[in-house]
Image (cartoon, rainbow, N blue to C red; front, side):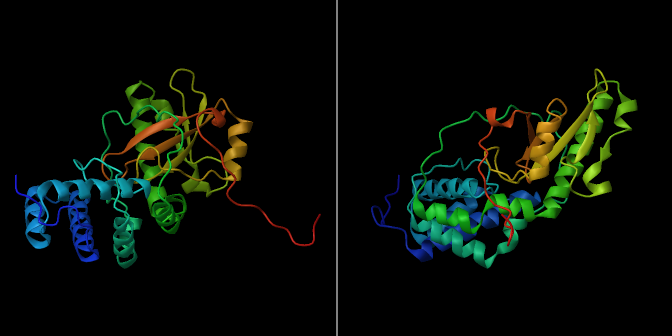
Length: 277
């Protein structure tokens, strides 16, 4: 194995900017379905910056770990590893600041998997992340970003509409599949749910609130006051479809009330009134 002439030395900003830019170039190809060869990219990068294959691969995994924290997709095969050199945070910050369109990516169409449903992630104690990474997450807040990205939200709701139509059709309930309503699209936001669907066995209403992200299953999300109220008012009918990995291979897990048993609810904003007790 070739030795690393820079072994034991920190990566320079120039080298970090180079690997981050190349990573996002590959990610762009992957999301667009364009063919690319990771080994070719790696070889060209190593020739440019003078690092070994192992060093470059490890840094790719570092980048994946940061993108996972940011609620962004990462390249298949570069499994996130979080033994960070903290300078990588600044390099990713520089790249995303120069190329903000990456943060708003919405796929042209989402493939409908044979079975998109997966179990929800197991609740874990929140891991301690470095302060510079916390600042980066606050700057490119995935919760606020997904909430504001109406194109992503609409695409996720449309995806769930198709999932529900197929589910009911496959269960021999075409009559119910024809009655599904995209409430958020037809009536606007505010109902406390996005899609009116049905249970196949008894025809009972299923009030689905869709939460969509390009990130992983653990990416946090906002819950509005109306949504929370509906979950309490109709707990037997209301549920969340958490659509994740939407840009690459959409999957869904479900959350049903009482929500406190499955997720942590943290107050984020307050309604302020002037001159009122």
